Each structure stands twice: as structure tokens, then as C-alpha cells.
Length: 231
Image: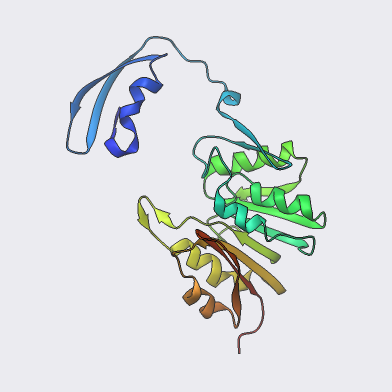
């Protein structure tokens, strides 16, 4: 087993001690190399990896590898606080993660048809688990933003990642905003939450005649725009 020090490889010995006798045999400036013998053959139980929590009246189930695995992040909470019964129709949740956005919206408005997409298989599984335990129905499938989307929506929402490894990367946010006009119905709306330090103004100006910041706090802000012909 080899890995970078900053990736958490040094915790492997403690985490695996029940099953594996792990010993470090070499190291470099940024990495460690371990060798191991299996002491006890583990039995895989998927259920043991599911983290269960309740947030307000919503049950959330996640598995490792999902953003904000063991908590409801502040950005999602801010975006959820802007939801209302007036949001109806076909809904697209981009980067669905745990599924908390879609379930929160469905709890407030029964007149929605949910589509949830993500590139992370762990997120898709978690979203499916979360929808099921809340008795919510939705279409869940992999898509790199709009790569596997073939219809238009009344409402597009997202709490997108702005990191690639440890560096800031706004490619995903830019694509979500700029290409949304192709996937929004007439008078359709996009609502996206981003870190307060990030400006999405250039992206919205390219795609929409008008946009605004619907809500914000010290850490995050929610952008909103409607599908209209740009003058």
C-alpha cells in the first residue's frame, strides 16, 4: 500500500488493525509505503458503511466518499432555506451528493418531478438511499453536469464543487451556469449556492440578461436567474 502523507495514509494502520498487520517499509518526502499480512479475513457488510442522520424532518443516508458525508453542509442549508411551494415541475439536481436538496424540495412541494445526477457513484447510491428512506421518487443516474441530460427543466439547482484536488477550479460552476440556458424551459429558473469568496457574475452575464443574489450569509450566497431571451 502506497499513498501521500496528506491523503491520510498514516491512519491506515489504526483503521485496518482488526484485519491487517500493516508495517511501514519505506518512505519518501511526500509518501509512505506499507506492507501487510491479512490476520483476519474481513466480511463485507455494505450496511455497516451507511451513515444515518436526521436533519429536521428528513432522513439522510450516506456512504464514504460523498461530500459532507456526516453532516448537512452550511451551503446546502442556505440553498434549502430559499425553497418554497411555488417551485414546481421538472427539477434537475446537479451534483446531488446525499440527495438532501431534492428531498428537501420534495417535502415542501409535492408537484415536482426529480432528476438527480452526479459523477460520483457513491453520491448516486447515497441519493438513492436518502430518497427511499423518505419515500420520495426520483430519477438518479450518472452525468457530468449536462452530458447525459436530454430534456428541459423548470428548475435547476446545485451546490457544486469548486475544488479540483486542493486547488480552486471553477470549470464545473461555469458549465452549470452557462449551459443551463439550453436545459431550462421558458421562464425556467436556476438557483445555485457558492462560497461567498467566489464571484459567478461573469458566468451569469454570459448567459442571462438578469440575475441576482437571492440570499447570503457570511460563508455562502445563492444566485438566481430566469430563462429569458438576452437582449
